[in-house]
Image 1 (cartoon, rainbow, N blue to C red):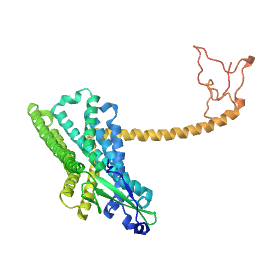
Image 2 (image 1 turned 135 degrees about the horizontal axis):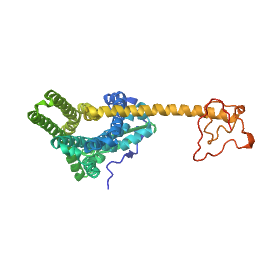
Image 3 (image 1 turned 90 degrees about the vertical axis):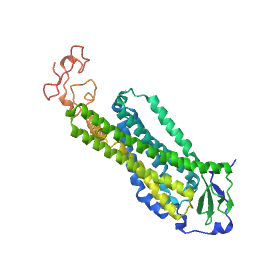
Length: 428
């Protein structure tokens, strides 16, 4: 059975083994994509990871458990995993990694697989956006739905269903290309190229991929573009437009029932929701739609240098859309912003108090070491009337007359009390 995704080390002929190539020929991506990865991707990565971690901290807090928040949590996880799967591609843009033969072999071997995982989490995130939009519409249409008891099993079924279905939909990426590596420059340079398994030829050789696999790959490309991108975009637009119409109708009915309910505030709320919905639909369409169109264009027309640049721009739009999801779906809510601010304050105070506690503990340790050098009785846990925060000389402690023990176990009706003065003497 043919392993269509395996990296093949081709025995190099003598001229290629002895030939050394310029560094520009060893780049693993076009110059424009390299510059974008060097300067833009780190910013996108930090904003997405930090923003989604804070978002998940707020959404998973015990006082706001509901279906929409758990779906938003899954969306945040998928967005972060998209960026995690893009890390090898980012490393390939750095000269220190692109010049390493070991990394180049790893990159050529794993590039189709990491691309498949990135597309999987991206498709899952798109469907979670659709699920969140549907849940918001149902809450507006059926207000008592938000009062239902949280059903974790139902959310688990929906989440697993989205992940499994998108995995099946995007799994063709694992076998879509065959990457071949060549050894050059006396074994110090690794060259490689990835051939599409839908092509008739792999370089100068005939493509060994079976006809059934080629047909499966052709069909999967269109199915992925339609079901994982275009259809959800259309559905999200329809759901959010229905949400606006439903809110307008609900507000008009409330105004007819009770005129003193504050029509100006209702109009302001309706205007704010309309702006939010328009921002979600516009951003979602403009950032996710071009990638599907580029997929279809590359299959219908010849793959040339211009389509490479278009594909790079489309990929950056997708990553920008993942970065903006937390802003559009969470930060537009005043309640969420207030709880996010409280969460940030809590963690900042916790870190500050932890630093102060560490400093106080170190000061207490130094103070304790000085005290125990003077007298061991001060460090006794039974000596409640003695302070461990200042030096006490041994002469300030006098033994009682009659040879009675200095410290005795208190009875149930007699407990130690703070000293009446600063002099540390025991009175009988």
